[in-house]
Image (cartoon, rainbow, N blue to C red; front, side, top):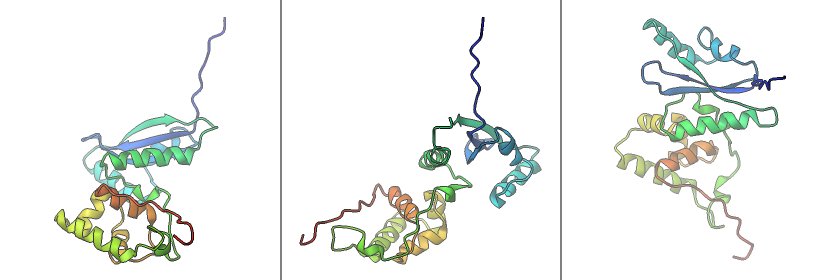
Length: 189
């Protein structure tokens, strides 16, 4: 009689969590099974993670490594990693790798792409973000941390610049319950 053996893939998504609060601080992907996640405990590729692990070591602790999911070969490993990063960002976790959410940078004139065909000026979006942030009585560094975007991204947006990280803009607008829809209007409208 044969037993069905289910082999788990070496392709997986993992998390590193605080041993004290259980809050997830890093999401990663690997095709090497547990080898890569455990490497973070000794020598991480990220300065942020190395610093965090080092501070935990000073307290005789280490991050908790957990497999979030095994990813079959037919599924997109990068896509699953992005899913988990966004999941934890939306839960309010401060991830050390929040910048890995495939940044999309627009380098041409974003004003022409936004709004009702007449173009919404980025300066209006910047003023909106700045006004809303100030209404929350948060300084830029505090707001950047809470929204999960880099401070430089927030500053560019508030200055109305168009060469910005669109994911960062969307993450900031999400803090206010807003989003942007790009609508292509027919000519002559």
